[in-house]
Each structure stands twice: as C-alpha cells, then as structure tokens.
Amino acid sequence: MIALLQRVSQARVDIAGQTVGAIAHGLLVLVCAEPDDTEAVGQKLLSKILKLRVFSDEAGKMNRSVQDVGGGLLIVSQFTLAADTRSGNRPGFTGAAAPVLGEALYDRFVALAREQHPQVATGRFGADMQVHLVNDGPVTIPITIR
Image 1 (tube, one colour):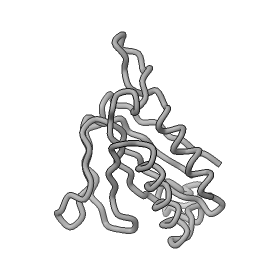
Image 2 (image 1 turned 180 degrees about the vertical axis):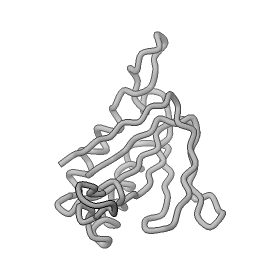
Image 3 (image 1 turned 90 degrees about the horizontal axis):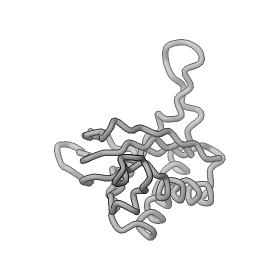
Image 4 (image 1 turned 30 degrees about the vertical axis):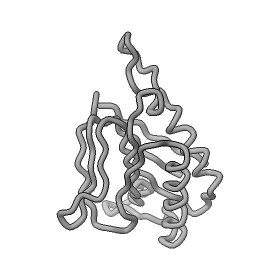
C-alpha cells in the first residue's frame, strides 16, 4: 500500500458541496491499494502511521505521534498515488488495485483505524472529492508498505 501523509492544522473532504469528513489538527492520509496488497499490509501501514513521530514536542522536535497529540485522521482513497510516469506525458495507473479490491482494502483499512484510533473521518471511495487542508509545517511524508 502507498500512503501520503500530511500533517494538518485542519482538513476536510467535500463531495457535491457537502462536507463528508473533517478533522482539526492531525493527519490527512491519502491511501492507495496495490494489486498484491492484503489486510495484513493495511494493518502494517496503519501501525506505522499511528506511531510515526511527526508532531513537535516541547523542544520543537518531531517526537510525537498522532496518538500522542490526540490528533485526528482523515483517510482519503487516492488511486493516483500509484501513477506510473516513466514514459510519455499521460500517467498510467496499472499499479493501483482494481476498484473492487481497492475499495475492500480501503474499507478494511478505515475499519481498522476506527478500532485503533478515536478520531477517524473519511472521504468516499471512488467519489469526485474536493480535499481542503492547511498543511502544518509543511510536513508531507510518503510511505510504502509491501
């Protein structure tokens, strides 16, 4: 699985003018399933995200996790993270899981996140979403788990 984390002071997802998910400070998690991914891969990715120390401590060092600071998670599916741009000018997306598998893995990832973290909001798989965020730092971290 591929994830792109952005530390945010606020973020929300709108669909057709309606807000479907929002958090105050925390992590915006853009996530993409790949064809060989499993629930175990999703759990490993989630564990990494929940423990990743990207929030500042009293000394200003990135030494705290989203759990340590009581931040939210806004989880948004984004198959374009698997874009292949090696040739031509139009990206290919064969590196992303097929929609049925991608949605199942996304739904399970969200369910696991809700079991392990108190504040989880989401977008909607396959929807045309507008993602609004204020990146705090800016801090943007890519993660790939295989």
